[in-house]
Every structure is written in structure tokens, then in C-alpha cells.
Picture (cartoon, rainbow, N blue to C red):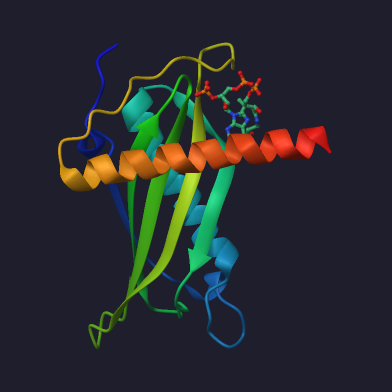
Amino acid sequence: MDAKKPTESLTTMAQVMQITDANTDGFVHGGSIMKLVDSAAGVASMRHAQRRVVTAQVDSLTFHAPVHIGDVLSLTACVTQAWNSSMEVEVTVHREDPVTGDQDHTTTAYLTMVALDEHGRPVAVPGVAPDTVEETRRQREAETRRQSRIQLRQDLESD
Ligand SMILES: CC(C)(COP(=O)(O)OP(=O)(O)OC[C@H]1O[C@@H](n2cnc3c(N)ncnc32)[C@H](O)[C@@H]1OP(=O)(O)O)[C@@H](O)C(=O)NCCC(=O)NCCS
């Protein structure tokens, strides 16, 4: 199976935040943003694996700035590294007030997605072949996060 470039999984999505996404003060619920993050990660990992995928873990999801009703959310997702059947996807989210043009980076998230075969079992996926220094850095950092995940699981199991 030939390795794929991160740009082959690159996924962008944009959505206007509606009243149903927000609380009574007009602030968008974190859960509404998490659902979009999960969708973007799903599309990016399916593009990489060319298989159906499930979310195995949301490693980290940080909200840097609030989002309001009427803001346009732009999500960018990309597979940073792939192992056997699992892939790490980085998702970044920006908000924009389309009237004033005011923008913020609101969220960064890392998700582990697993590719499944037609019987619902984990199946091998292509590796990642970075093209740029930045993509190589992201791949290296993904390895560090995987090692931390494995270590944490082992520590918890040995307790
Ligand atoms: C994710 C899932 C397919 C893993 O199945 P499994 O039988 O545990 O499979 P394995 O132990 O062989 O692991 C398969 C891969 O998943 C990874 N994985 C399993 N659980 C994981 C977890 N909690 N976090 C990160 N990676 C995980 C393994 O590291 C392995 O990766 P690799 O093949 O690249 O080395 C299974 O746990 C599942 O279906 N979970 C429910 C997923 C789901 O429904 N998500 C939607 C939200 S409810």
C-alpha cells in the first residue's frame, strides 16, 4: 500500500452558527463545535484510508476563544500520521464575523480514527509521506502523542 501525502486527506468545511447551536446568551455550545470537529476528522481519515472509519479517541480538544451565533466556523482537518489501522487527525477551527471580518483561532483538536473493513474489523491503512518540514514536524509530534497514549493506557492498566 503506497503512503499518502497529508494534502491528500486535507479537508475544509465551513458552517454558519445558528440559534440551535447556542445558549440563551448567544455563545455556541462546545458540543456543537465538537460534532463538527468529529465530522471533519471523519472525512479526512476516510480520504486517507478510503475505508469507513470510527472515532476511537479524542486526544485533546482546546477552546481558545468563544464562538457566537452568526459566526462562520471554518474547519481544516488533515491526517498527521497513520500506524496499522489507526490514524491521527489534526483539526483546527477558526471563527469569523462575516460583517466585521473579525477572526480568531478557536480550537485545535487531535483525534484517533480507526479504519474498518466490511466486517467492522480494524484494517490496515496507508502510511503518511510528508512533503514539507511542517508536515514532518506534525508527523513527529503525532508519534509523541501516540507514545503518551500507550504509556497512559499501560499505567492505568497496571494500577
Ligand atoms: C476503535 C475500535 C474499532 C478498536 O477496536 P479493537 O478491537 O480494540 O481493535 P484493536 O485493539 O485491534 O485496535 C485497533 C487500532 O485501534 C487503536 N485503538 C483502539 N482503542 C483505542 C483508543 N481508545 N485510543 C486510541 N487508539 C485506539 C489501536 O491502537 C489500534 O491501532 P493500530 O492498528 O494502528 O495499531 C473499537 O474499540 C470500536 O469500535 N470502538 C467504538 C468506536 C465508535 O463507535 N466510535 C463512535 C463514537 S461512539
